Length: 608
Image (tube, rainbow, N blue to C red; front, side, top):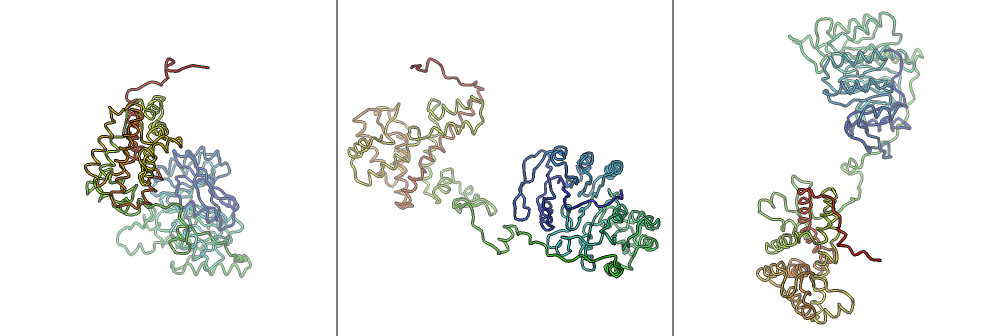
């Protein structure tokens, strides 16, 4: 392995298995270091493509998402680091796929528990192809002031505290990611800080060893001293001992091997990492510390004395003019996320949507303040739900029952009406449910099912003004407006619409007042004297009766009634009801496997 520096201020990575927080931490570190380009070039999410929005300082950026490692590598040829956040089940396969990409130089494997046989294969392939594996079971690594892997060094506050936003003079390598954070802090207190830090991971077979990185640090001119934190178990530290004895390392090495307390236990103890257990005297922390000391490393008498040993070594190098301490610089302020700032009370922000009919923030959704469970427990129906979501109040049962009757009576009116016809033609063209439904709904308007609001509006205006049916009809005629709610293509005075009769019967039986309906009937009597097809249709019946419902319930002001009619609530009833039938026609055509519809020639008048 050896060679030198792994990362720089232009290093870019591919991030496998999208995790928002570690990627954002990488980008925040980039901004802190003054990088011109984000360190994450692309994200790999198997089976997904597109973009993920994240922040690079104050700027929101879109990072490409690729479905395969091959596609990402081809799209970002300058990205030579692969950060693998896959689970232990797939980490080996995805890491091998990355190593086989000619553009990938370094692979960091975060997952713990990767099978040892798989790890050995990765190590063998990496060595044969002059590539570097960091991990498994690693937090990653960091090039101070330039690049970091995932969650390395923790939060931005910790990074600033440890002065990792600019390079220092110390190369650091550890097995433990958690202890790396501790040592970054200690090193920053007593030296000018880290130049590069690596956590090789705590598994029995790490992809790269302590000595691999120490030898590499030895080749980096900016690294003036090296700090190593090992642990009991395994024999990795002895390769470092051998390198020291052979004179391959000419920079001061301050080292400590944790786990000296293991001898206090009568039986073998596992210390967190898979590799942190002593397999004999040579693998004990005491034996390793002694061997490192004898090989020339600076080894303190305890972990508590480790920081002091680092300080003493650094100060000696400064005295010998081998280190010129880095001048301190003030890092830029990382913009705080809005949601965090709001929670802490630092800022206030306007909302983008207002909702008064429902709330899903609690343990269960609530409609107009009524919990979902309460609606079910009370045995309320669709009409009650509509009263809550549309009118924001619980209407009396006769009102909600009337709403339900309207929905049932208007659900369908056969396949020949324009809405059903459009839906049938669209379904037979092979379109999906939503497309078929919408094609039918788009025909609803003044000439088909959309006259309920107009009927209510004109009947109300005429009644409230005290106009006689004659005055009302004739005034509409002078304006060139057909009376909404009057007239039918099929029904006649001697063949009334059964739906209208059912609605009128229910209202006369249950409503406290039907003054608007009776007025509509008087208008019908006058219009029938002109033509036998000018009957009160279902739009007119619903429109007039809804006025009676709103006025008679005593729960709405005159202004609210005018607003309800003006907004289009009543046409909403027809839209809701007819959607049931249009969906039915869609399913019917698909169930019958009907072919593409073509209108017959004989039903078309071809003329010039």
